[in-house]
Image 1 (cartoon, helix red, strand yellow):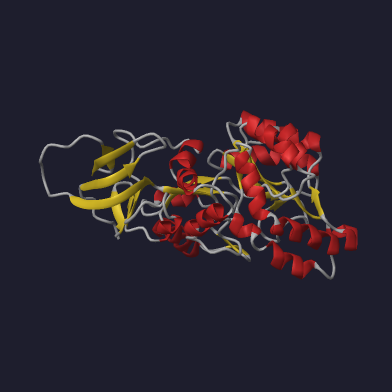
Image 2: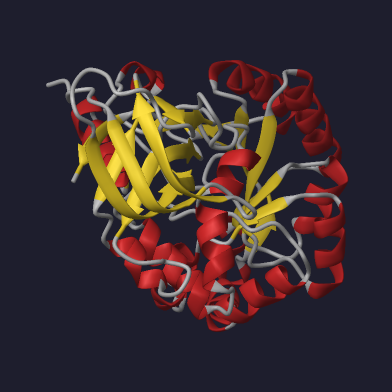
Length: 370
């Protein structure tokens, strides 16, 4: 059922970006106006509080659960859970389901799709991605995925190599020259490349290949953090996912003790790793990794984890809202921009837990929650 499209008057503390705050704005015909309109038509609905541009989950998997692709009804419910948590823009970081239909649903968050994960046989989660028997297939596969997505390609950069038996551990999936060619192909197609990366060993190859973003980043060493920052490569720490590394280690202890020990080390220093990334000046993005074993709608939990790691709440709020929107190319809130807003009863920059309870959500100018 379509949500009525009525005028809205938003007032209080409207945070537009790091430098701009206004006391009020108006929404008519789905668009923002920063100037008071002439009295006309029906009375506007009033929303008051601390207001942010819609939140962004930059590592989310609409259409995926622990067993692989889900049906479209389930995928829609996933997206609605994100929306009702205040997430109005999702970068889908890989899904086996073609979710291009989400673009036709005005009640669902905006979606920037990365197509399907690209991996190798037995070197990623079963039924999640495309598995290439021949690494030489990577560049052409990337070309296809770049054209199928919305400006992003998702590669699996490393995973456990079980063929090594008890010595099995995280290892890069792609020869460095093939990886570099694939990234160049994506860029020629006007697509950016983001890469799943847990290990230390894969990071140098990612930098040399010129990737645009690194997911997880648990293996980025202090020696390379400066280069990551200088190259403008963003990192999505996915702390909700990394919090599961201890459980993964326990499952692997008996068969893959080397891998288990590494996962346990990364789990133990997960907060220090994020503080180091932040202190190095790396652009951090907020992503929940929802859609595998993590439920949707948990953006507030991921933000709380970043604050627990030592990132100031003021920066976390910016990272989860206007900075991420700018990074993904969706622009700032200006006169005439689409009205995608989230309202809170208090300032989440003072208490990050406020993000758990939006009092209203405005998507494409329609009040869809509150």
